[in-house]
Image (cartoon, rainbow, N blue to C red; front, side, top):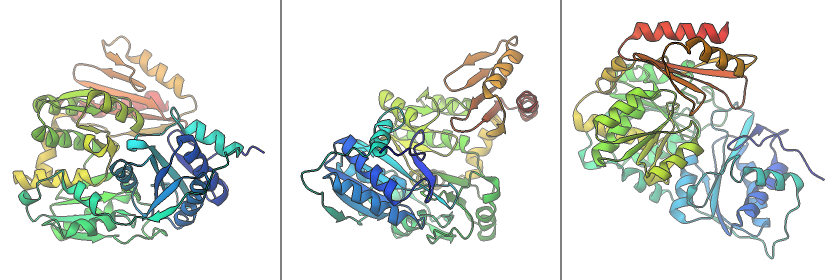
Length: 450
């Protein structure tokens, strides 16, 4: 009998435990994953959520019953599965994680060989169909399970992005949000000259300080206050599975993710002149300028990890960045990492003697932005059409790479629909004119919200 599974989303698995995701469903997904890939060796791990170990065990059972061998790396971040998959030459990997979803949710993220993405356009529908039908092939023999908990190769790889000998003894506030990042910081600590001020450091699936998602302004105070209190050089905070990291300057000010894309582009172009850098269409002018100024080539991609990774591969790009704090690296199999960015930024600050605020304040003045503003609307397509009609006579350059982008002489905007909810997402930027940016943001919000 076919079972309808609602936990399959556009890029991964996410659902409420136990009604949308439980041990039986996890078993089916694991078995289907192994069978669809035709895998002989897979690597698995899980995040710090209380439901994750049991769900991971169920996934492993399904994979083993498919006749596939499993290496289990235990508690980890999403990027550790990416690394293990490409570094260990596995046929694929998965991590049981719900990142920053509510406490009663969990999920699964997958990759195929080489840590290449599996998504709704490639592989996920096949896994869903087989998991729902339960029409699994009979394996000749059950696979074998092996524990693999040595993280030394991963730590060595992270440190390979920077010149450790050139680092200064910076003081860094690190906020793991009681997620998984703290364990990796502890492994890096003895290899770096930094003084770490650790807050909400220990992994705790009850999330005593709330779900770690520093993209939300209400979740930033603890990091900002610790930076000021300890006179730190910067603050870094992560989400639960630490595939995103967020920065605070030495004054405790949160730095909009957009400006980090340009900063990391500069960091790579200093090391690899002439390289391509991929960016998303939401906010672009600062990134394009910085890439051009440092001799690189800026390439635009649709928003979303599968699109960014595809364009990076086709362009042989050294780095790709989204303003939502996802940063992708060619030498990390084009995957995103929440550890590599802060190591590179720390190296820039060390080498230059410039504070983080000085690195970004000039860019913020040059291209002030609204940040992403979300609005719930009943008819998202109608709203986008009304916006285009409103500005149609103003000689704006239109780009439809992702939603609607319009660029004028002194300002530009991008407005796009959410893939999963009735929400319109707006981003506005200008050329060195905060007032113009704010006026146009208000004008657009008036059109969106009525």
